[in-house]
Image (cartoon, rainbow, N blue to C red; front, top):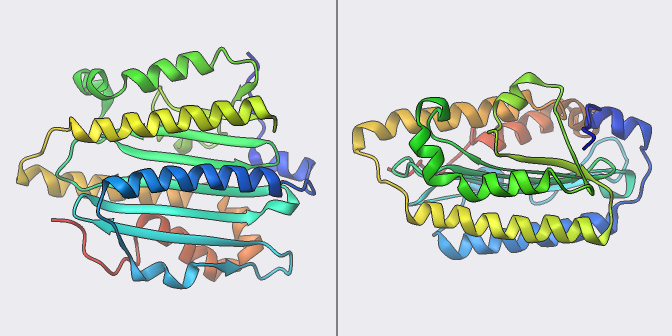
Length: 268
């Protein structure tokens, strides 16, 4: 299977004016359904720090916009449900990322859809430990994700995406799903069905999670936030977002992704 080494920025430069509003609407609807599934499982409180980002607009007159909402709760350290971009001009990016409270040892959830201008899809269970030194953790939580990883790498409709940014690759597990795909009904069905299946599996991971002793929770909470912050601040697409929204709003958006301006306290 061919792999894509082209950056998303280069792909957008090559095809900057594709009207992707229909695709965006379909992906956002799918992500909304997945958010509803998570929200039905956990008690969530909107964090006031992002109330003024629902919605927001670009400064370049392009019509680009976005929506960023964040939540916390007794079992959730930080949840982001967001979109950014200009779907009528090729680019959009949407996130559902969930960091569990530090009492759990189950993995966190990372999920992103986008148009660049082809469909972009990323999904992973983000480990709370180093998998190389905790093989039992991989055995407990990653079986179904790994099966989907292997199955989808045989799907000729999907093109594995390899980020040119080293940290973005380091932050992914070897079982992650990271693909680009042509916009067609078959690929959209694959993305929708697999994402729903794996969100269900992630919720099952929470149900079977070990509960950490109190003295381990502080270190885990600090590790989770460090990884969230690094991923948000080092994302290569921040350069594009800054051109559209300016440095001040971009800095606020990036900070919101990792919880740098949060108002509500982290769960005990």
